[in-house]
Amino acid sequence: MDTKNFKASEFACRHCGENKIDDRVLVMAQTIRDALGVPVRVNSGYRCPTHNANVGGVKGSKHTLGKAADLSCSLGSAKMFETVKALKAEGKLPDLDYCIKYRTFIHIDCGGKRKSLWEVRG
Ligand SMILES: [Zn+2]
Image (cartoon, rainbow, N blue to C red):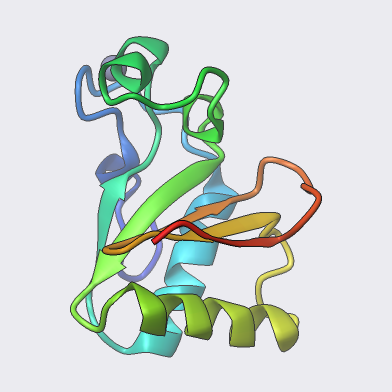
């Protein structure tokens, strides 16, 4: 499924092109992109197990289930994280189960609820 600003192919495995991305990830990315008002880059979407291991992803990462994406934009990850929090508070990201702020990007996923929805790792 494509959305207004994203093609599903942008979420394919960078290593082999396989793509098991969940449509809900695209819907969340589009909601975030609309709120930011600037282009959003998909750093990583679906990862096959081989690629996930190659990039040092944790085993069983939600990326390997097609339920996660790492996103970045020109406004920086702090602005993105703040925007995602506001959208969630407004009920506009019902599928979001987990969001991590890293120094240069954010991770979003719909891979099931964790102890905490928010985490900061940089
Ligand atoms: Zn691959």
